[in-house]
Amino acid sequence: MKMISVFGSKVGPEEIAGVTACMESQWMGFGKKVTEFEKKFAEHFSIENFAMVDSGSNALYMACVLLRLPKGSEIILPSFTWVSCAQAVIMAGHHPVFCDVELDTCNVTADLVSPKITKKTGAVMVVHYAGKPVDMNPVMELGFPVIEDAAHAVNSRYYGKPCGAISDIGIYSFDAVKNLTTGEGGGITAKNKELINRAKMLRYCGIGFSGFDAAAANAENRWWEYDIQEPFIKMLPTNISASIGIAQLDKLNDLQAYRKKIWQIYTEELAAVSWIICPPDAASHETHSYFTYVLRVPDRDRLARYLFDKGIYTTLRYHPLHLNKLYQSNVSLPNCEQLNADALSIPLHPNLSMEDVWYIIDTIKAFRR
Ligand SMILES: Cc1ncc(COP(=O)(O)O)c(C=O)c1O
Image (cartoon, rainbow, N blue to C red; front, top):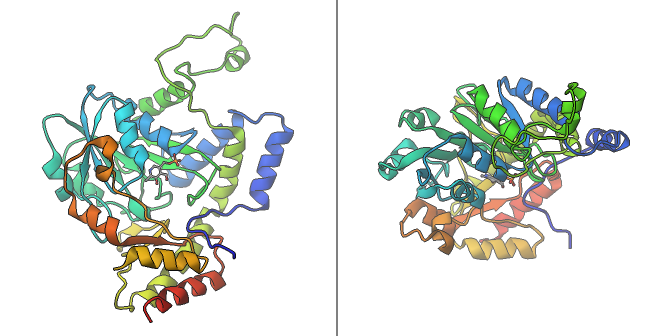
């Protein structure tokens, strides 16, 4: 039986041509294509400072390091997010403090963050869940640096500003199922140019430039001797992944429009079903990226199994982090726990045919008929 996947990206001849050209050039690793992608991405979103890295997870870690918070600072973040958010905080030497999210948007708000503030709070990390922008102004008014996780929210906007570039520092994921894919990849942006200069130095083991660059810049001699500036790991993206991203940027608006079309059909068809709660669309001051469509339903596990047996793969994004033993968190976060019990992502991506979409709708409706 054909399985309909829950997430996905779409590439075509343009991405294939980009990758082929890159391979024919015999330069597949980090190089000029990365710089070209960075320039094109920054121009597309009118952001000043942007660096590509090898994943969104690593971009999160990089962001936590770039803030230069005192070791052991607390970073407040939603529990309803991907594990790398908390892992990045810990790897950077800080403590994740989990907070609740709104039931409808699955986003944090200033009111949910505020009770978690202590003397040790160093920053707040927000996630634009599913691509619906967090209400950033009140969160920024709390007075802490804000790390924006825009992994879902490439091309989302809040009062016209691109998500990821609203606050001090933001990150993107370009992994295989994101709205803009580079296979694997990520990006980081910041208001302060110095932070992105530092990111570009750190991502190459804290060296900052290669011997090739040094030789090309006519270093007088011994270009193989490195001036290591800080201890750091390697997070270099490749020319291959950047080539995919360059082609994807040209299609981003069209891919997003197709996601929006599916989203709207889902809402038109499913909002009237008495046992289903549909997710909220963008408000008038927002642009949504439509990364994932999350239903809330009673009997969620049985619905997921039923759909699976009918060839429709669904999932929960995310199993709340505060419930994970590793973090030894004793907090109770009622909305995250409610979502853990009744939320379900159904397929939404540009590889879905309209036939798939109607099959998914009819199959969901038939569950309780
Ligand atoms: C909210 C969120 N943050 C960060 C990441 C990490 O991105 P990557 O897969 O590129 O490491 C993801 C990936 O799914 C995510 O969903």
